[in-house]
Amino acid sequence: MVSRVERGPVADWFWTIDRLFLITFVLLMGIGLMLSFAASPAVAERLGLDSFHFVKRHAIFMMPALVVMIGLSFLSPRQVRRVAMLILATSLIMMVLVLFIGLEVKGGRRWLSVGSMSIQPSEFMKPAFVVICAWLFAEHARQPEIPGNLFAILLFGIAAALLIAQPDLGQTILIGSVWGAMFFMAGMPWLWIVVLGVLGSVGFFGAYMTLPHVAGRIDRFLTGEGDTFQVDTAREAIIRGDWFGQGPGEGIVKRIIPDSHTDFIFSVAAEEFGIVFCMVLVAIFAFLVLRGLSHAYKERNDFNRLAVSGLVLLLGIQSMINIGVNLELLPAKGMTLPLISYGGSSMTAICVTAGFILALTRRRPEKRAQERSLFRSVAGVPAE
Image (tube, rainbow, N blue to C red; front, top):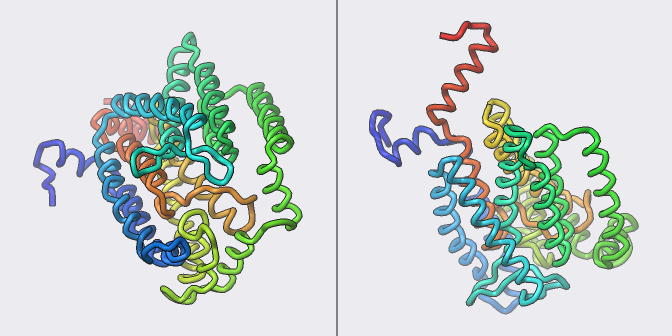
């Protein structure tokens, strides 16, 4: 245990970090490893691999991801911006390269091959994009003569264009939703709300008309016709799990879900551990979002407020999309469940997001002074 009177980077970190956030992130990683034992052996066997191939790789991915999360949580807000700028620039360059030399999987180019590994640059772009947009919105609010809002709009246009070119409409909708929420919290004028709403609707309709795979997924969702094997099987697994599940290792339907260890791991959790367990999982994600928004509400620094809000919404909306697809509430979309699904790029990028959240919500001396001032103003106590 680290003493309160002890001074040093580790002691300061321990007593200023939001430990509930930290425990929740580590808990989700542990649940993800546990569910990997349930979901991945059948997939590995179908591919002719060792039964625990994906379990071992999942555990290997966890170690550096955890180091990344803890390491980033030591940063100051200024250092968070600098690291985010570096990650954003690198990921955008890699997203351009993906279009020319990327690996094509299921009709999309989203991965770069680096040695024996494959990296999905768009995963790392998301948290960095949120942080930099938060900074641009905050700078415009601080100094209106700085065209921060315009630069944030241009940055969103670049990121969205690169995602659509892959094509990856789901990730585009994800960052668009988070970006729009941040813009709204930054004081978006009503005219902008109407304009961006119209542009978003036009863009969605254009994607439906020009991208066959998007139209196919939406049509299958609305009509139930065509190849709906994966979502139908996922629904069957959830129904079979009932309230308390079939028990660890007792799932049967999970064995025929093609992406049971990634996009449909929620269905595997439902079959083996039941709907009650899944409700607890949803509650954990809801806790992360609500705690993050609570931090943001108390925050007087515009950058910290917008960045924390955007980052927790990024986690919340991504988990909502994944769970919605599993429950057939949304059209099928390949999107991982944060810190739960298998995937090195996804897990490491989510840990970058978590590290940024931990860094920006630490209790610093100037932050405590702001909180005391806020309490005094609310309580009607005169300043000292």
